Structure formats: structure tokens, C-alpha cells
Length: 124
Image 1 (cartoon, rainbow, N blue to C red):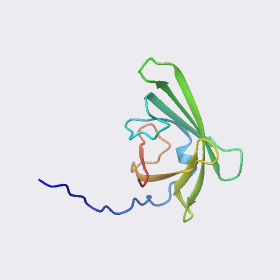
Image 2 (cartoon, rainbow, N blue to C red; image 1 turned 90 degrees about the horizontal axis):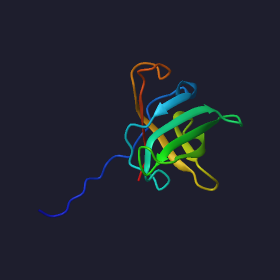
Image 3 (cartoon, one colour; image 1 turned 120 degrees about the horizontal axis):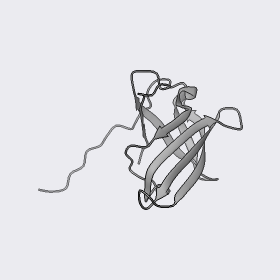
Image 4 (cartoon, rainbow, N blue to C red; image 1 turned 60 degrees about the vertical axis):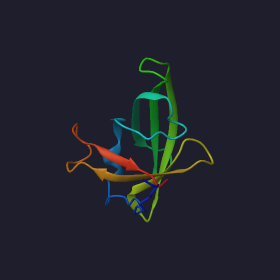
């Protein structure tokens, strides 16, 4: 069988995710790692209000290379950018790197409860 490819539609963010509903600690369940996330185990992200208007501070912590590896952290800053839709951000671990961050799926319940979940995607 020969190689084939399917052209997929670009990812689109879900409608209006109130940013404050994302504040708090989230467990990373599955990931296609970026260069910064390779070797991360037990990853946790904590979202909080940023130091500047419209910014979100993201505290990303994980164990390096194994479940009991050394604890590492990668602080990041998120900012809204996607056509005034709060479901699309750019996230920066450090200047000048800014990566797309799209909330492409979310639980039907409010995101600020214990059973909530959301899915983040990015265009490759």
C-alpha cells in the first residue's frame, strides 16, 4: 500500500472559555510533547492571573525523565490572541518564543469544578 495523506481542517477554538474558569491546578493526562515537555512525567499546570492586564501565569511542573525524577518547573505566560476569542492564546516559556494554545474541547460543566476537563491543541 502506498503512502497517503489527508488534509485536515485547521483546529478551531471552542466558543468563549472564561479565562478565570481555567485558574487553578490541572493534571496533564496525555500530551504530544513540545521540545520543552520531552521527558516530563507527572505534569501539573497551575493557571493564575498574570502580572499584566490580560495575561495568565502558567506554572508548569513535572518530574524529569521518570515518575520519581527530579522536580522541574517551566514558568510560562499566556495571552489572548485568537480573534478576540478567549479560547485561543499564545503561550511563552521565554522571549521570543510564543506558541499557539487553543482550547479545542471542554467539559459540558463549568471548568471551575472538580470533574472538569479541557483539551488543548495547536496547528503543526
